[in-house]
Length: 299
Image (cartoon, rainbow, N blue to C red; front, side, top):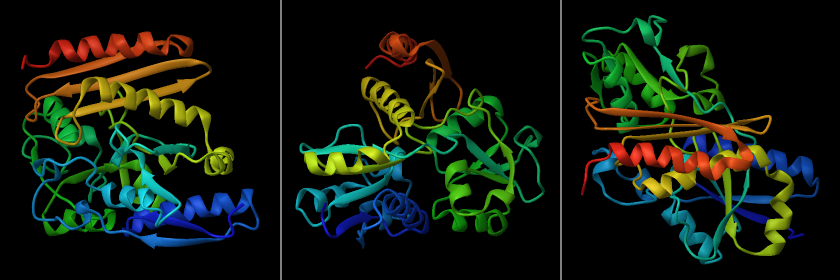
């Protein structure tokens, strides 16, 4: 085993927390494990004055980290899987996905109101086209206020922007210790999360010694769920610029695949829920694809 591993990550509080989680698990598996954390600033970390979907680049939060992997500057990269494009650079692979946290979205309201409580004229903060599309489809009169920033920054904007609530990934809220602020957790059939939400992935060069080293860290069920989501995402196309939600849940050999696709204003939204045995995963994916593709405008 290498004497010391160099781990690349973004510098946000959540990214560093997730990197610490990976290091902690590796130290449990390998008591002699030693590491150096290298913080890498990505394009997404430098642009705060415009919505990410308007920038028109893939991998806004990972490209510079992947470049460091390819150049041998780091050995491992820790990512939120929802940030990772489905097409990886040649020579890189997802070596492990940790056991997934709850993939659902959380609603945080200063008055402890639930998602169902918000009504006409309520101001809800989110920068996600996916959340905006699904929320406006269900509650046409809600006013969407774009917000960006770290989790604590977005929580503070509830007060500074006079918001009635914000929607965040429950996994990140829990990892950062803000779960006591959550007033509601949105069901998967109400708000379909993006592919990979709740999952931490480790990207590496495709070197067998590294793959073998990380194999014990991999959670097979979580890995399978995320791979199914990423497969459907690849077949549909589009990243953060498309209001697309995809979630795969596997339990006792049964797969539930949910997807949502619609316009940004929520006027038209297709919701898909396909089920089947895990041995029929490809059929389930293709059935979901057919419905989503059928709802997309002709090019």
